[in-house]
Amino acid sequence: MRGREPHVVCDSCGRKVPRSKGISYEKIIRFGTEPSSMSNVRYMSKRKVYYCISCAKHRGIFERKARDAERNAARMQ
Ligand SMILES: [Zn+2]
Image (cartoon, rainbow, N blue to C red; front, side, top):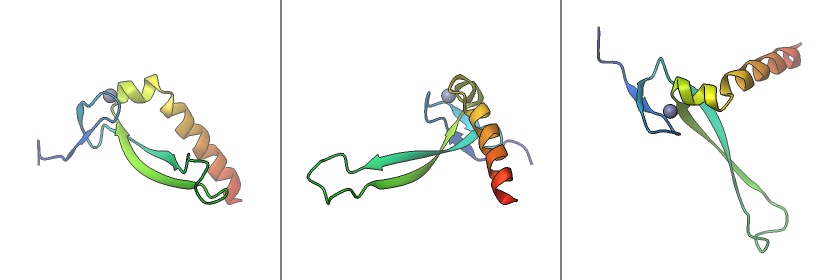
């Protein structure tokens, strides 16, 4: 059971990393930037991306994830 781990591609630098080492991150993409599009409807889409560890650190995703986890835990109560 070695070497058959699925790889993911870092969204930032394009490096291939084993999935267990990649940091998954939900990126929110906004559509509807045209003012002519239906009133105030904003389209948002979540896309799951992966970052390698160095990019995740660089972008502060680790910290953000920790903060989100705290916030979610607080909301659960
Ligand atoms: Zn990277």
